Amino acid sequence: MDGKTRANIKPGLKVAIVLKKDQRSGTLTEGVVADLLTKSPNHPHGIKVRLTDGQVGRVQKIL
Image 1 (tube, rainbow, N blue to C red):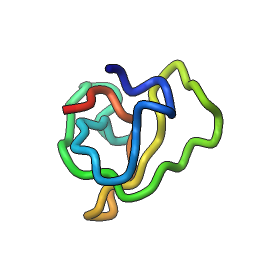
Image 2 (cartoon, rainbow, N blue to C red):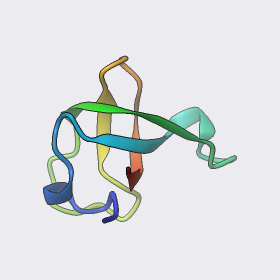
Image 3 (tube, one colour):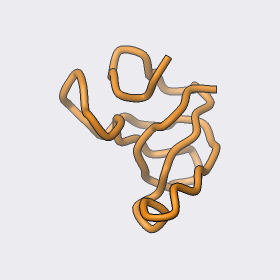
Image 4 (cartoon, rainbow, N blue to C red):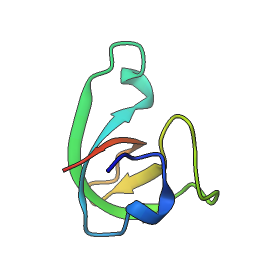
Protein backbone atom coordinates (compact mmCIF):
# COMPACT_ATOMS: atom_id res chain seq x y z
CA MET A 1 0.00 0.00 0.00
CA ASP A 2 1.20 3.47 -0.74
CA GLY A 3 0.67 6.73 1.12
CA LYS A 4 -1.00 8.52 -1.80
CA THR A 5 -4.54 7.26 -1.14
CA ARG A 6 -6.39 8.60 1.90
CA ALA A 7 -8.53 5.45 2.27
CA ASN A 8 -5.39 3.38 3.02
CA ILE A 9 -4.42 5.50 6.04
CA LYS A 10 -6.17 5.37 9.41
CA PRO A 11 -5.25 6.78 12.84
CA GLY A 12 -3.16 4.24 14.75
CA LEU A 13 -1.27 2.91 11.70
CA LYS A 14 2.53 2.84 11.77
CA VAL A 15 3.89 4.81 8.81
CA ALA A 16 7.08 6.33 7.42
CA ILE A 17 6.74 10.04 6.57
CA VAL A 18 8.97 12.65 5.03
CA LEU A 19 9.10 15.89 7.00
CA LYS A 20 9.12 19.28 5.23
CA LYS A 21 12.76 19.86 6.26
CA ASP A 22 13.75 16.42 4.90
CA GLN A 23 12.06 16.66 1.49
CA ARG A 24 15.34 17.38 -0.33
CA SER A 25 17.25 14.53 1.31
CA GLY A 26 14.30 12.11 1.41
CA THR A 27 15.00 11.07 5.01
CA LEU A 28 12.05 9.11 6.42
CA THR A 29 10.67 9.39 9.95
CA GLU A 30 8.64 6.53 11.44
CA GLY A 31 5.70 6.97 13.75
CA VAL A 32 2.02 6.33 14.48
CA VAL A 33 -0.70 8.38 12.75
CA ALA A 34 -2.72 10.64 15.07
CA ASP A 35 -4.60 12.80 12.50
CA LEU A 36 -5.06 12.97 8.74
CA LEU A 37 -4.56 16.52 7.49
CA THR A 38 -5.17 16.08 3.73
CA LYS A 39 -8.87 16.20 2.86
CA SER A 40 -8.69 15.03 -0.78
CA PRO A 41 -8.97 11.27 -1.47
CA ASN A 42 -5.61 11.20 -3.34
CA HIS A 43 -2.46 13.31 -3.36
CA PRO A 44 0.51 12.82 -5.72
CA HIS A 45 3.13 13.56 -3.02
CA GLY A 46 1.47 11.56 -0.23
CA ILE A 47 -1.27 12.21 2.32
CA LYS A 48 -0.24 14.72 4.98
CA VAL A 49 -0.58 13.38 8.54
CA ARG A 50 0.28 14.37 12.11
CA LEU A 51 2.04 11.70 14.15
CA THR A 52 1.32 11.02 17.82
CA ASP A 53 4.53 12.90 18.74
CA GLY A 54 3.30 16.02 16.89
CA GLN A 55 5.48 15.81 13.76
CA VAL A 56 3.76 16.59 10.45
CA GLY A 57 4.71 15.15 7.09
CA ARG A 58 3.58 13.25 4.00
CA VAL A 59 3.20 9.46 4.10
CA GLN A 60 5.72 7.63 1.92
CA LYS A 61 5.20 4.07 3.22
CA ILE A 62 2.72 2.19 5.37
CA LEU A 63 4.61 -0.19 7.67
